[in-house]
Length: 110
Length: 119
Image 1 (cartoon, rainbow over the protein chains, first blue to last red):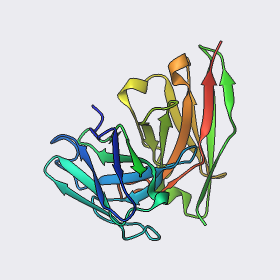
Image 2: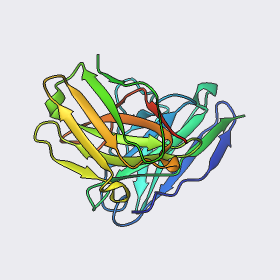
Image 3: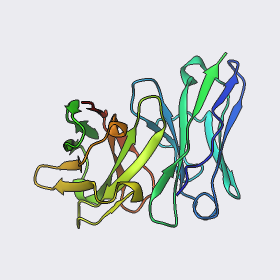
Image 4: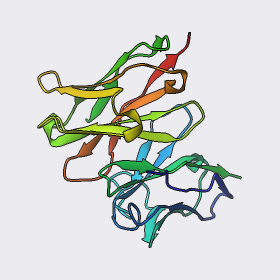
């Protein structure tokens, strides 16, 4: 099972919006609504930001939103803040009953 | 509150084995699966496998089959991940993460355990 494809880096200025894509296949992202997004600050454990494509866990800012179209899922962060600077990973459940992660995207807040 | 507390850092020689523990608290242990995810230095996340503490069912990533064993002790609420025949490319931070058995996402993660494989 190959990793999901994410851009290596994205950047934006405070207050702007950015979108991170996550491209899979018809065996994972395309067939299940089980895409999650994680935020990871340096030296810290990943934190769940979005689950089941577009749901936010309690306590996660509504500036974070998720969507999916075909084999590609997306994470959008609106009203960028300095604290959003981190690595972001997508993951998906697959038809092989395993999970697969994306390669990660480094978000820089300019 | 939910907590997953992992064992401390390990240094192992190539060919040795390591066993990492993950102690759960703050939720019903047998209602949630435990996944293990690792992250090599400067690299992305890699899913290693999953175990259901309720019935012991498990599923491992294909590239680790034969070298990894995941177990749980429901009396102490501890999950274990043992990796054998260690190689230098097993050097990574190893995380446990809980997953609701009726869901498909990892909602809480342990703090991570650094395993260094070096001669």
